[in-house]
Image (tube, rainbow, N blue to C red):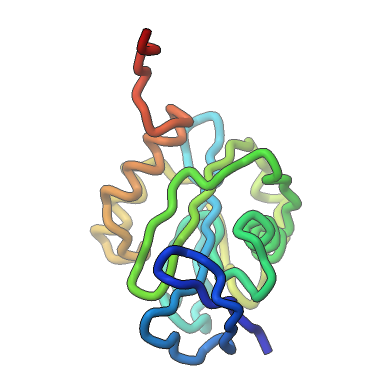
Amino acid sequence: MEFWDLYDKNRELTGKTIIRGDQIPEGFYHLVVHVCIFNTKNQMLIQQRQPFKKGWSNMWDLSVGGSAQAGDTSRRAAEREVYEELGLKIDLSQVRPAITVPFRVGYDDIYIVEDDIDIDALKLQYEEVQGVKWATEDEILKMMDQEVFIPYHKSLISLLFGLRQTKDAHSNLKKQK
């Protein structure tokens, strides 16, 4: 049985938890994490969900994603999900989420990392992931048009690729004197 911490509208822990699958009460939120792994060719590692996975079966998705469990920090949840889904140990101790996207019942922390990993060496979690591949921004957007990629806002996908290149939300601003 998996428990999730509940947060308030200011993203403060409330001390309350729920069981995964239970309805999140009104006014409470839970934490989700995604890790987008890019290579030096500006391609994102994407994963295809298993056909028997509840929610978005057979669809392609960002590199890794999942819910934080009770007691997890965002960073710890992201590291755990990468290991569980891809068999890859990463250290995010010096990495902050690139962005946090609020949604109806939670907060989604999205991390961006760069690593030219050998996808043939990954150990995919059978229960969740049926395959992985590298894809460009244009390829992902086309997959969204073909309805084979989870329907995020296209602007979010473009933002992730943009943030990967700049490593910052500012675009080469000169220091103000």
